[in-house]
Amino acid sequence: ENTADACSCQTLCAETEGCTHFSFDAATTSCSLLPDCMDIVVDTSSCPDCRSGPATCTAGPAAGCVDCFEPGQCVTASSAVNTENTADACSCQTLCAETEGCTHFSFDAATTSCSLLPDCMDIVVDTSSCPDCRSGPATCTAGPAAGCVDCFEPGQCVTASSAVNTENTADAC
Image 1 (spheres, rainbow, N blue to C red):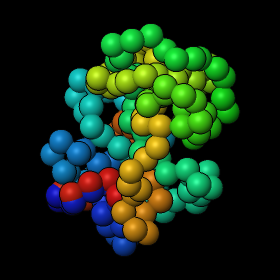
Image 2: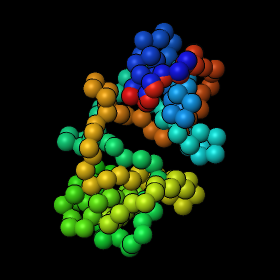
Image 3: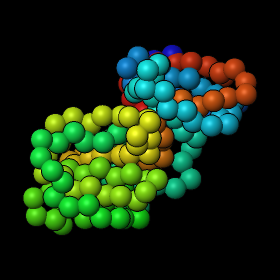
Image 4: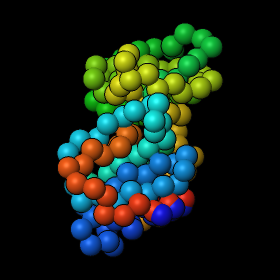
């Protein structure tokens, strides 16, 4: 089915018997309800806009941190304002917000490298050079839909079984 977003897809999964995980494709609004999820695979060629997650989130983002980040690295017209190591993307965003001249950031979870950037013309997903990168603005202007905690990951769930159901929703929340 089609759903409005990933949160609607997650809600549908939570309300569907046998569904423990979901995958949502924002490009097609397709919501796949799954009985399990052995791994989440990012395949930018077949599903660049996919988000997957559990039927219910057990924990939300860090207190005070609204995840408006996107997978990938910012493409900037200028060099980085600064590069430091931070614990996570939320800490990187906070550092960006506190740094003069920083409007966007890119965070590499594999290396904990936080690049503070003066601009972001585009966000590029490159699974070979930076598969764990997340980028975003110095501050988020809007959070996820009310009642939806985004614990989703980029990519599609790899399941041992066939889908419980596939629906279209408006977005991941």
